[in-house]
Length: 119
Image 1: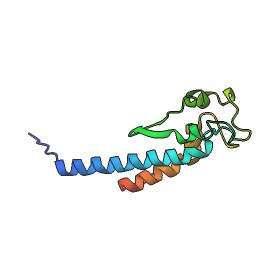
Image 2: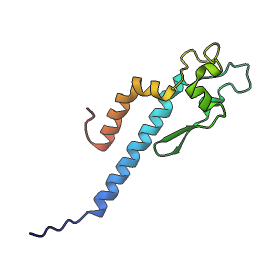
Image 3: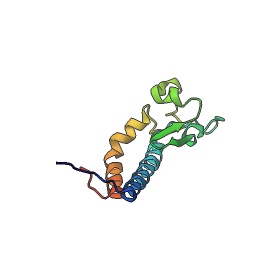
């Protein structure tokens, strides 16, 4: 028995477009929902808000904070204590904190975009 599989290029393109829309949604939600957990310098310091405002989507699925202190603050918030006078909700590993609190909601939103159900 010989079976021939024919792919519908139009359907593949539509699926890719829906995946792109879902990825854009995930990236934007991640940036938005991480903001409350990102350390912020005291207002009197010249870099107040620099770290929080440096978040951007470098490519689909890759959110990057470009401030020079981003890496050290992400892994070791004690390096510079921003909690006092800056952002009382600041945490190290702010992406992981955001995922724990909002990950399910983001997945449900992406599933709606893709036309399925998030479990």
